[in-house]
Amino acid sequence: MWETEVAIRHRGCPISDVSIDHPEVRFENVRRVASGDGRAKRLLRFEGERAAVESFVEDFRDHPSADSLERADEERGWPGVAHYVSEIDFAEGNPPIRRLVEQAGCFRHPTVVVRSGIEHWTIYTGNKDEVREFVDSVERFDNDVNVLRSVHVEALTDGEAVRHGPFRSSLTDRQAQTFRAALSIGYYDGHSQVTMEDIAAHLGVHRSTAGEHLKRAEDALLSEVGSRLFPGVEAGHRPMKH
Image (cartoon, rainbow, N blue to C red):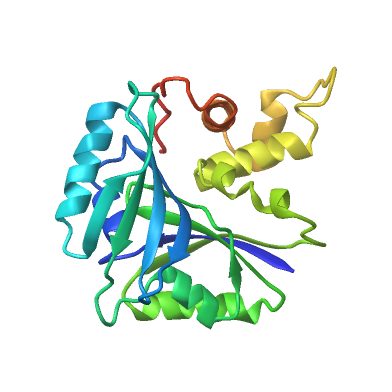
């Protein structure tokens, strides 16, 4: 089984288009449910300051492809997170990415994390050629695609095995590379004597560069973990990607 993470700028999709102007809002396309009339509703999760989320919602509703967007949870103060249900009417010649995943014969992680216009998808397939077929089909509709990672995994035993996608999408390529290097050479092992200089040498970069990327990666991952362990805690400032 191949696991592939791709970053997509989906032009014409309100989720991708609107989030470009709202980088301070973290956004997840959590679930999709088909209705009897051939249409579908999406459960969307917004995370950020109240004013920023409300501005995002207003712009989303103004997008020509957005049919509706309604609050799904009760408004009790502002816990930093809000859920909405939306309907999107994709224009002819601009199919939803989900359809292209299925047409390529791939499976997908149900949650798609979006930030600054970029949709982070995790897809699975037994044939790596299907990944190329999927990427080509997305590009064919004038969208930008960046394959972040494609690895062979032994098995997917249950739903928990694919829940790490949103965590990886919180990191830039360099942050992920630095964190992976630190992990691989034992930086986080108990009583480890691995230093930042060792990580920098492993990557072939300056110590300060390695330190900056690792600190940002740690901040992003801890923030992601914290938001899931304590969803009612007010969302604070999240480190920006560089």
